[in-house]
Length: 447
Image (cartoon, rainbow, N blue to C red; front, side, top):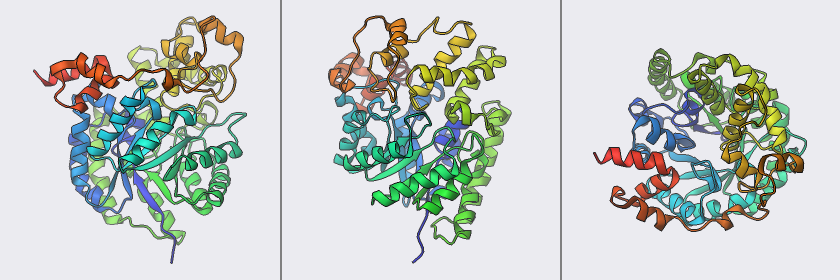
């Protein structure tokens, strides 16, 4: 019997997050949901990441309603979300009671697979999410955040994967958010994991540097089970490799797949019109569709690139784009080589932007960077130089144990604070995750 390669479609989440800062409206995906469900995907990634924040901050949509609506159309296809471990969908650690309640309600509202990662690969920040996901019956897929540095070796990622498998991961995703996992490195890593683990291995990458499809080819040769792809109109550039192309590739390689090419073509037709709409109204910058091999140096994720471009455009500082990109690896080194994935990518990107625009390094330092240097996000991959740390936070104490152990329960307190504005526990969590924006969203909804 031929091995089957399965596919996770990213069009409803990471594809548009990477290309156009998560601005796709539900109305633009609604007409394709039945087709997606009939196409033979293992899963459709449709929630989490920045979708929650974007829904309430920019699109005036209820994110909980979005996942319920998508789930109602998925009779044959699992729904998948991306969760930042103890950060959930925000940019800081939340107390365990918020993490547990959020995961419980995510599953209740229609999430089948939760892909859990930590920006520092600090497994202490994964414990509560893995345990709670399994408790409420969803698949706990743990993603290892791939990056390149003096410590991030194949041996490092193999041991990390073995650890999270022991913690209860049902599957492992290699999360290459910047498109920097090269084909032969991918082959060695997947081969190592398949030789030591019995759970499925999924590959996630971006075409940012032009490596994506080649990396998938070698990963499949090494034994990968699942690939993350984006339907062609929203593929390439800072997004994922194209679904249709990878379908053709795995078929030619002699593997089986459940995908139906006729349905993929219909899905592509739908999203080609959506793409043109967003290009015309300038929501989707054409630059995000191009390849930039310099990403192999800067290691900047797709979603971060589109957001950085949009922010600099808003500041009328687009001419500084390449300077900021060049500053990012320098800031990353100062901070102990954290993988550039949310929230670390935003933190490093913001600091690099300040350094360049203000013309002086660390003249202005965001609160989040200070909290990171205090150990409140977790353990950096490489020890941070003490002189550098003190230059930013002075003699402030540094947390050495699990950061969430220092956080008090928050759900009941948030419930009291938001009062009658909250009609459900989901509303309370919307406020608890993003207090200012969440409250404003709930107020506008009740007008």
